[in-house]
Image (cartoon, one colour):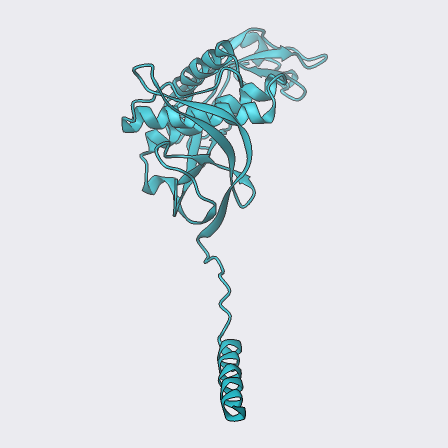
Length: 280
């Protein structure tokens, strides 16, 4: 009996020794792996099909990547928290598709910033809906009118916002540099999109068709004059003009004690042109 007990104790100690000797594996994300999660519930979205039927009602979460806002990009899959691999959006989508989504989001962000009656959860619902709307149009999901529940945001507000987003996209393609990331892994993929307004430069040059002014041109100073912008000039990411553009300026404040011609001045800029001239 004593021998049997000793054998059992020896076997138990051996197993314990093996178990405690096993290495502990700690999971770390690689360089292109990012933690994605549904941080909180923001409200209900209705998966409305093009025939008017409601396929499902989704209790939508606020998607985040390392704490930054993101959006679900496949309405037909469920999302799971976890590490996902990041790719440039251009590896999954065309530039037009990216711009459609990025500009739609830009419009909604501008809209909600100026309509403080909408809280951040309602703003996110509008953003997520417009992402799915654009993707449905692009990929043929047949749910182009996916929307937030009318208990979350009224039909009138949603109709106005979604229509405004389409107009904004059409009017501003080429005026913004657009991009984004797609995060893939287990469950639904998510994405981040951004639109950055292209910025160019113009130089105001003193010229005039009024020969009288030229006789005492030293009196024609630009310092202190204020000009108002009448048209957006389209540029590429380097600030150079990406397309031929027309612009107009009007002097809204004349330099004190100085002479100038009043009016509105027009000009054109060709691609790669970095400066222009305005008659004064």
